[in-house]
Image 1: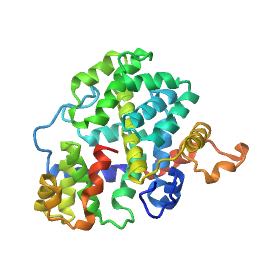
Image 2 (image 1 turned 135 degrees about the horizontal axis):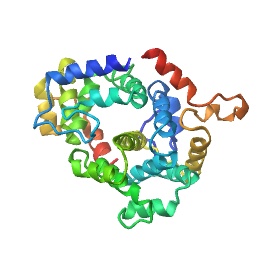
Image 3 (image 1 turned 45 degrees about the vertical axis):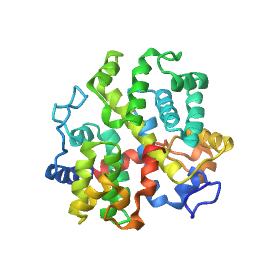
Image 4 (image 1 turned 60 degrees about the horizontal axis):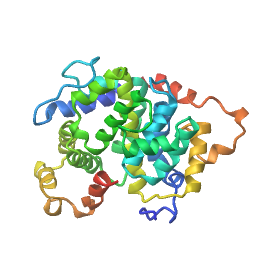
Length: 201
Length: 131
């Protein structure tokens, strides 16, 4: 049940975004750039980290939605569940294991990261840009998990599916309201955000 | 814009360096004494957008004053034992007029701290530790 009195009882993240648009709309270009923009990590790997971190935080809404998005990008839900259960034995790409261990520890005990944790990521063949992107995705979902749980948003399997479909089809820039425009009239999602960045620098 | 934001943040941080010794960053491409300033400016493709998020959350229109928001920033950072963010946002809260003893009191014991009880941290505690 929603903990903010301005939200309907069975509020979704879309309700929260609409009610507090001034504050929360700024997250969209950042989230889109982070999750769909250029990165050493594929969108599927980033969605896996998103679902994984949300699972570590037991955030049902984010974990539910991003598990479905990750599946659409080719990540098996059983593999995600096994990674959350025990990353060491999960049947997942060995290169991803030190990254998942890193973001789990960063979520649970953020001040205890060590050079050895980072070295395990580098030893798997990643560079520090890849590690930074993994950290930024982890941080973003810790933020979203707390927005959702702090506002008391629970959602349902139906909500998770609607959110996931929007994230797969349109990325992070578009809200539900603009969802009904025909695809032909849409500009590429990432363009407006880039233009703004240049002008403001 | 990002440069202005980063510069302002770091003016705060330089006035109150984190306690307890600084740690080497884990990124080989950054200098050993790197701060968030280097991380942000080395990766503008990510952090230029984040500057706008931070600005809206911490300085934009809100029922909470910037001082109250910086106090929450310092308090949450202390719950996470993040010396760097705690040092920077504690200094920022003090610059906005929060008394040092108020922050010390919060860190020591939320229940008896000399802070406006309307700002009461009873909600901040669980959302950081058990989201």
